[in-house]
Length: 253
Image (cartoon, rainbow, N blue to C red; front, side):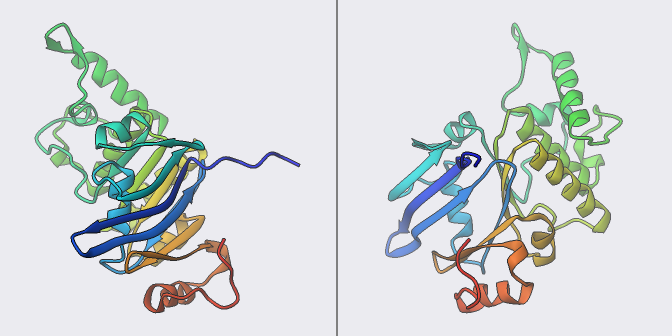
């Protein structure tokens, strides 16, 4: 019998309140290497607060975060990045007027003395794009020239260049057409094969069912349940989101 795999991420008993509003109450989720976990729920369910705790934007009032089975304190986004946790928000945080290498190294530029090492940044950008099979022929164009799918791929490539092991993706295909969505979905499959763990927040159930191995549904700051995607229908997941109850035939995965 093979030894059990240790989760990349374990969030245990996370509480977070803002004044008298309890945004997270006793929330526990896991993420394994090479796995996509879809985080689902209506606006206000607690999804965004949870990922901001993991990404270091918020400090939890109580609870634990473990990486590879070891407890860590994620006190800022910089600390999260040092632990290999990267977040790609819906707005992507790209600088439209800068080219691809400048965006991949934004805030973490390579230097040779006092000057920017543009050749090394361009070479490294090309390497990570080629590794992820992202086709952008001219890296020196400002990124406003590129499609939504290409821009999303640049943001993902930036995270992977800086050795992300845990990737949080907030509505990655919300503004994309079918072809661009397919491009980003293929990239997510590549990341899974490399062992990256992905938390995927999306309101598009079709997308989530195509990509996620497990689904965690939240409602009013609590986890309704976590289920294997293959064990549920979209209607059953909608019932979890709306009614806050697991389907009777299922137990938590």
